[in-house]
Length: 296
Image (cartoon, rainbow, N blue to C red; front, side, top):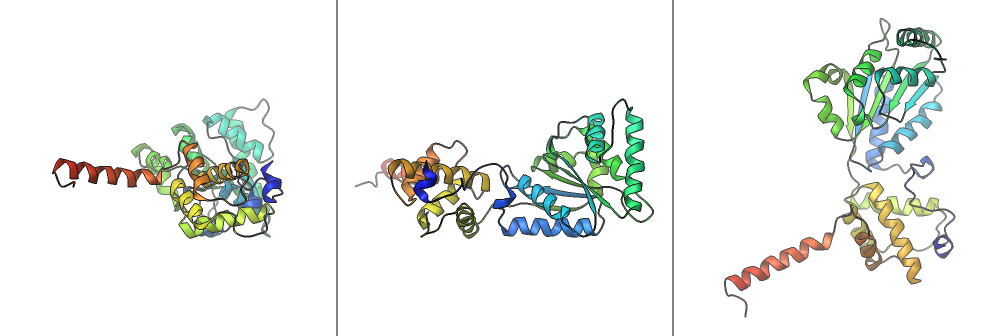
């Protein structure tokens, strides 16, 4: 097993979002600051978008942990499954709030949720709903969420909603029939890919958490190649780094060099091939030289 080979206690680049591996990268820390500030200000709707693999689910789970540890009491509802009808949304929300829903009508469930939110507010609780993969929510469910967000007292929202989604969520919300929900989103944040220095720090952090102690495991050239091939997307960085470790282990080497990363890139469909552009430019130059007779 490659763990012993590199002196690791656990896999450093697993794809499961694990808050134990969370590293305060600038885009994630900025997003968390926006979320905490907007929630503290009582905003009804907040949106975080990012490309596939940029860390939205990890950020969502990190927010769950941090909100759960605040001194001011917070009741959290996490809805990771976006494929819900409005009726299923009501049931899921009621269950997350600890309400029994068996043999209840939709109207009864909605009324009980409303009364429960009022009771929680009177007890000093904030209620925050986190919805992952929100770009996949049906239009009718988005409208149901908007209506829940309308529940309020004279001075406070009874329910705060955080939508995590891919950029397609912005496209959805730009449609005229969803303008009422769009106008209620008080704060938005778009996660960006990692820069080279951030990707290097990310790799080293995950290796350290996994128990690695020693000289840098990935050479600087390997880190740069991995970053370019991953386009700075954390999930792809994990995939390529994991495969690079396995290739290095198979070859019996103790350090990751560009040659191992190239093999990992070739085995990963969504990875970019940084060297393809250079070969294409060279072929174009050679073609032009032959066409115009300037080749010796």
